[in-house]
Structures are given as C-alpha cells and as structure tokens.
Image (cartoon, rainbow, N blue to C red; front, side, top):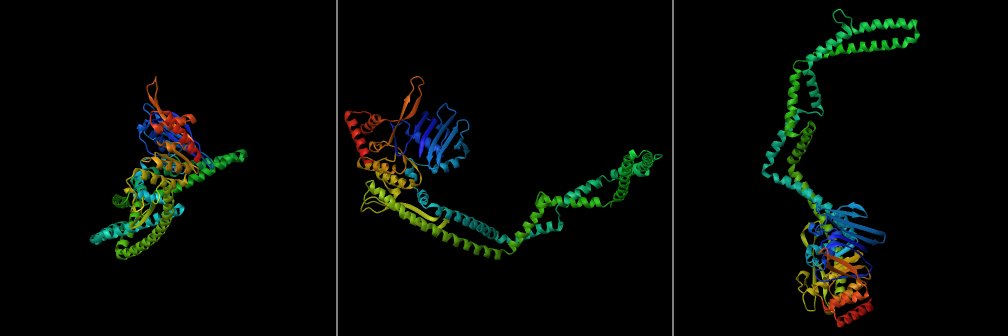
Length: 546
C-alpha cells in the first residue's frame, strides 16, 4: 500500500506531504480546490504522460515521490519533470530507471481509476485486454508462443510474395542474375588478393630504385668500390687481428667471437642481396598484368560491394537467388505447405486462448453481477460476450464485448449503450472492484458520478467492504461515501496575503473537522446546526457498519 506521498511544484501545489493508512482513505474538497491536480500527480508518478504545464509557474522542475509498503519491505518511486528539457527522470529505490520500467513496477502496486476511464472502458479492444488480465500466466505464455508463430507466418508469407511478385518478369530476373553471377565467377576473386597485388605493384613501380640501392649496398658489403675494400673483406681482416689479440690476451676472446658472428651475418646478408638482385629482373609485362587485374577488381567492387569479400558474398547471394527462382514453382509449393502448417498451429493455439478466455469470462461475469446486485441493481445480469474473427493477430482471433441487462424485461445490450450515469458508475465500480484484485492499492477518482440517495449508500458500503481487503484512496463529493472513511483528508486552496499566489494543500482531518466537512457535503457552503447533526448521525451510522 502507499504510505507516504510527496509532491513539489505541481500546478497550484508548492509542496505537500501526505501519509496514508490502510483501509478507506477519503479525499474531499471544494470544486476547483485541486483534487484533479492530486490525481494527475499520482498518475505522473505511476508512469503517465504530462506536459510542461504540469510544472508550477516559475519552478525549474516538478517532483513526485511515493513510498509503498509491501510484504517484502518498502519501495520508493520517484519522478521529476524538468522545465528546461520537458523530460522526466524516474527512480526506483534510488536507482534511475526508464519510464516504462517505473510504469511496470507501479502497475503491481496501484490501480488508478479516473473519470476519463468511463469512456475508455467502453472500447471493445480495451475490454478484451481487461478480460485478459484475469487469465493469468497461462494466457501470457500462449501469447508468447503465438507471437513466435506469427513471426514464422510473416516470414513465409514474405517469401511467397517475393516469388509470386516477380510474375511475368521471372525470366528477365533470371537472365539478369545469371549475367551478374557469371561476371563475378569469371573474375575468380580470392580473399586478400587485392592487397597482395597492390603491394606487388608498389614494388614494381619502384624497381629502378630497388636495383640501384641493392647494387650499391652489395658493392659496399661484398664487392668493394673503386680502390676501397668491401665491408666483408675489412671485417675479415679485423677478425684475424682480433684472433691474434685473443691468443695473446684470452680475456678479449669475447670481442673476437662477437666480430666473427657479425662477419657471418654480413656474409649471409650479402648472399641474400645477390639473390634479391636476380629477383628484380621481373617480366616487363607483369606490371601491366597487375594493373589489369586490379582494374577488374575495382569494377566489380563498384558494382557489387565495397570489398572483394563483399563481392564474393554477393556471388553467393546471387547463386542462392538464382537457384531459388529457377526452382520457384517447387519453392512456392513448399512454402504454401509450410504456411498451411503454421496457420494450423496458430488456429489450434487461438482455440486454446479462446477456451481460456471463455472460462475466465464466465467467472468474471458472475463476480461483477454479484457486485451489481450489492449495489442495488438487483436482477441485472452482466456478461462478457466473446466472438471469433477469421483474421488473427497478437491477441488471437477473439473479440470481447461487455453486455448487460440492467433491469428485468430489458434485452441485454452492449455496455457502451447504457445511458444512465448512475448505472454506469455502479457498473464501472463493479468492474474495477473485480479488476483490482491483484493490486494492494486502488485509487478511485469520483467513481460516484451520477449517483445519489440510496444508491450512493450502496456504493459507499461496497467501497468500505473492498477497503477491508486492500487500501482504497477515493476522491468523492458524496457525504455517504465520505462518512465511511477510516482516514479523511481535505484538499483546499488558499491565496497568500504577502505573495498573492494561490496554493493547494492537503491535510488530515480530526473528528470535529470531519463532521464539519460532512456537513458541507450535505448542505453546501452554509453549515447549520441541522446539517451538523445530520453529519454526526451519518458518521455514527457509518461507524456501525464497519
């Protein structure tokens, strides 16, 4: 249940904090005092959408937070709307979460039913979703399975349409794909070939400098230049000298060994350079051949992909498409058989979903009918009528319609055709009482619209009964309902004498203040001894019913 609510900078609210208790929490106030602001604030906290005009004029942000007590401990929900960006920040137990995550968490804690929902619940699509909320995890599992089957159906259908859509252009498509495939196949591309050819071309373009530099390096190392000895000759002489030094002074043997090792390396390098000189005698046509090959690769890349690997992938794709199209008649037949199988699976699953909904509809209809009888609509009968469509979708192929026969002798008719405001309010209360069974807190915003007299008393007693099983927050204008309160709060607005600004506040009422507020609800703005006495009697009578 919700134990504490804090609201900052929302419309007429500067800052308020309200602590709620178990049972029936009633909120009353004059018209325009700000009851709708309180509901909007709670709706915002629960994940609803609101614009920047939600923020109090002159404030940088609006903030709402609620503390909820559960069997496992406490949960804190917070949401802040920034003036500058118009975006909200949501937190769950201090951790930042998305609005969707906040909404999912809140849906397990609170059900809010406002006046606007009277119309939304008349929509058959919403009625189906409402019925589904009573079908439990079994239906949720069915829907996951159905979505998987629908995905398969869409994929098969797409493939069929692709094949069938070619129509008279089939041969033209085959010819085009075959030409493209043959063009790529003739090139016989290899992964990494382009890099190798580019490196070879770079080498051939620098052949003259390579030959010159290699010859000069070889001359310096091994052949000598003019009157100079080569490096290998000079190192060989030095090795002999160091050998003599090592013989006379063994301590310097390491110098002889290191230079001898260097002599071996120089000899090896010279040998490799001589072999490299032979390699530089390239075929003069090789560069031309490489340029032609690179040009072929470039043209294919321009037409079929940004890399040689992409062109090869396109080759595989063309081959598969060509095989599929050339065998399209057989492929179409295979896909049609597959589609019939998927449709058969979907149909069987839709039958299971329908059976589950029908079973839940019978149970829910009986519960709502019983509540309506408690609310003074004796002999009325509520029913959820389920019909089947030929088309199927994520919800199966069912349609739901709420049907009611409000009075004896009257034919059953859709809920959307009920004209009486009083009847509609009681039907809505019955529906919402049943649908709220899975949440610990239910908020009713003037569910009593169009109700008065004996009916108002019946609605009050029903709300009181429901509040024994879960926490109820109810905004009302009826004294019969307000008298049932376990906790009574007054919503009122005032204008500051110094600031001149209007603010809305919420305060808990003691017993005397409750009697005064009940008297106001009974008699209007003028409170008389008679209305005060009537208020006391109404409160005493309500206390006796608890």
